[in-house]
Amino acid sequence: MEKQQLIRDESFEVEQREWKVRQRKERGKQLLTIVSPIFLLLLWEVLSRTGILDIRFFPPPSTIVQTFYDMIVSGTMAQHVGVSLYRIFIGFLAGVIPGIIIGLLMGLYSPIRHFVQPIVMALMPIPTLALLPIIIILFGIGDLSKVVTIAGSVFFPVVINTAAGVLNIDKIYLDVANNYQTSRRDFFFKIALPGSLPVMLEGIQMGQAIALLTIVAAEMMGATSGIGYLIWTSYKAFLLPEMYVGLILISFFGYLFSLILRALQNKLLPWR
Amino acid sequence: MEGKPKITVEGLMKAFYKKQGSVIALENISLTVEEGEFVCLVGPSGCGKTTLLRILAGLEQPSVGSFTIATERDDRPLQSMVFQERGVIPWLTVRENVAFGLKMRKLPKAFIEERTNFYLKKTGLERFASLYPKELSGGMKQRVSIARAFANDPEILLMDEPFGALDEQNRFILQEELLSIWAETRKTVLFITHSIDEALLLSDRILLMGAQPGKIIDEIIIDKPRPRKIEDIRKDPEMAAKFIEIWHHLQEEVLKSRE
Image (cartoon, rainbow over all chains, first blue to last red):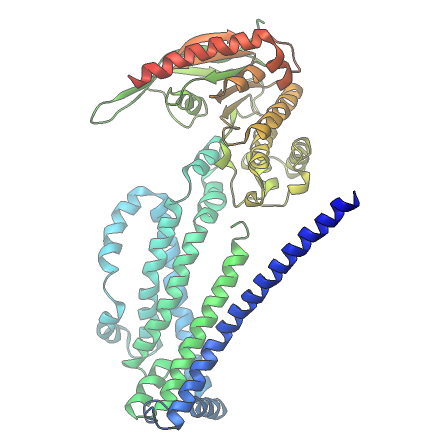
């Protein structure tokens, strides 16, 4: 009996050693992930300080950080960021909300789908940015034209994913709903909406990325403020540290938004 | 056993129209299931048994012919179906799944609560009530599906190979659980399976179906007293003889459909 226990203990020990080795390797990999961006920044810093990289095009990260700080202190940062975030937020909603509604209608009612689909498919490949001149003529150079441009770009991935989300709901759940005498209203709220949500949220995630791409380009043309304007005018005035600050802002907000949407996804889809 | 007829199917036909060659899925099906009877439909795949069940479930329309389900109480739904394993809705918790039929019928909250709790307890799902189906094993999911159908208290129950995806040991356990719940309610059940053992254990009567076109070729009465256990069925030489009889019928049908 005791012998049995000894053999057991030994097998646990063997497995524990293996486990520790695996853990160490895992930590090593995590460390690599943290080290890689730091390594790149250090390399950049050294290369531009030693003059191997042209400092006019690649100012050292420390200079960019200094500029970043100065812009926060002077208040220009808050102004540009505030304006851009406002436009992104309103434009995003103005694209997502009709996208969801039309997408759900397309998914639920096949005549609507057959009618709307060709229009969506024909318009989708046209970059909204190519329409920017017309949009500016129609909506002016203020916030409205940027909002319309963003809404136009965000709309398509959302509408297509929402419709696909409804259509991809497993047929067996429709049978269950039918068999248990689900009303139209309950069918919408208990089956169609939750069932299409995962794919719909993927579309919204895509829309979010597109909104950031669009705002920069939209603010380069016919704008007097915003992150895109900051990047464009700094570039034209050859103030490259300021331009890099603009790029960092875009990267930061892109990351932040996808984190927020990921969190929202986990919250809305506990069943996945 | 001469009871009131509960399900009556008369001259039911189902054809599927396709441009290149239409097919008759069900040919001239007539059958009666009595009140409180447990009937299994056994047949090779493609014999139209699922189509027949879906017609009775109101999910498909017959091409010709009709069926009636006798109603005893007006506030009862006509039928509820126990689906195959994927039929549990993944975005609803176990409790919400079990309560689904009752909620859809807009019954009073307290009543739903009570009935749901009763069947959660009966199927041993109480501890899992607030979990989502992804966290359950296949057997547990089917308990949810069974609880949902019984909680809805329909006139008849339709079951579409509910244990088809389970491993053999789990299947034995669920079959006996199903029988014990059924024994309390004595609902009329029409149950589809391709397992002869399952049919022998569960049924009062087995309807054998042939394929192409789907039709009922024979019926076999199982009068073994209840409650039954899988061991009793396996030990009983009479049941063994019935197994072989059914197997010969089905074998013929399967071979015919390969020609």
